[in-house]
Image: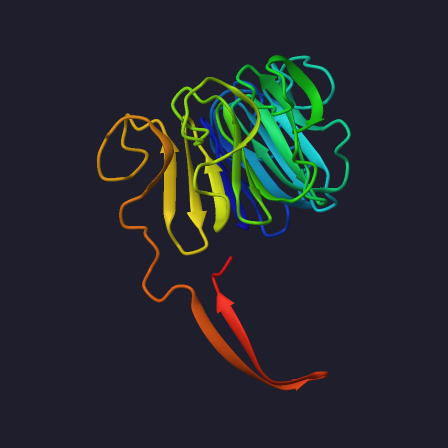
Length: 288
């Protein structure tokens, strides 16, 4: 396969041929095979997605896919509008196009009961439940059944990750911003002052980050230097800092994943056959 995504009760895989197959629980139709017939113990093809898919994202009770043409389709539980088709009409056992996102999308991320998309222009749009401000449009209230713009993220975003009740974005400058539930400090801004309805900076991560991943009640980031930092709930040791010390409201270093000696690495490459370029070029690998 080319990619795999594990949801709460189901799993989906993207084949090298661009097809999507899913397996596991199908109570809400989130396997996308048009049936919703209960548990499936082996992969089943998703209706209409036998080719042309670039990415798949499985979450709690719904799943979304990004086509090679930049369109987003979703299926499964739609009680909170997380399918994004303009109206919450119940479970969807087959893929449905997301309203207004038929092209121009670079990434999709399915959260607990909300979904977010990153456009090719670096903007973030979200839809679904807004119970904790996870839509990020500056208000906290009713579910949104069609994509809406996230406040202050109309450009400059490189990657997104939708968690259970929070959402995070990585900017092209290597900074992390989060919004949504902050009950356990999963926003990472050094406070636990309630829901955040628009993006806020994560403490100490205003540059030098290469990836972010939002989980249930915690969030983690990978730095360009190879370190891992996590924040949020730590009742099961999910922060990884060697102890269960309670909620972490700011990023904490994960034990054993500090930057490695000698990283980043500088290289000098001799250019011998490149028109208009002569001599040596210097590269620094892993630098922000």
